[in-house]
Image (tube, rainbow, N blue to C red; front, side):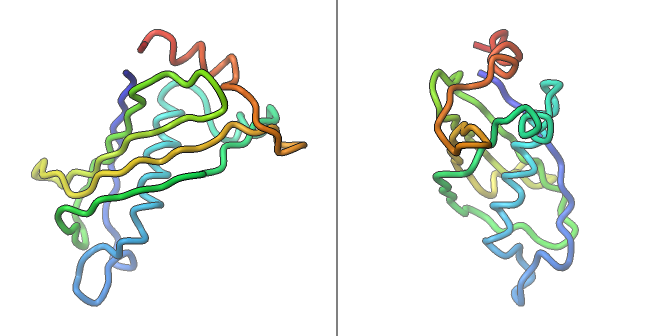
Length: 135
């Protein structure tokens, strides 16, 4: 299992009239968590795209347990419970506030696609190699 933590400070523009983070912003928080999880492996989404592999989101779910508010320091925990073996990768994500309270849980699935044809492809070898020690 591979797990990565990334911190994000809630900006005023991300809150709604009730002074809580607007629910749609969690998709961006999850994305930041995924991008940083890949970066912590020594890779980047940019490099993956340059190598001809793109990763569109095909499924997104979220469960909102508690609100996040302006200026909270959030920790986005991103976990790969299983090493991808085909064209799909699924990230399990949790958002905690600075007191360590769980605010939101979610799951995001993406496909590995060939950039030029949009055809499904398997996990790139370089990503599989980086993940191998965790599984």
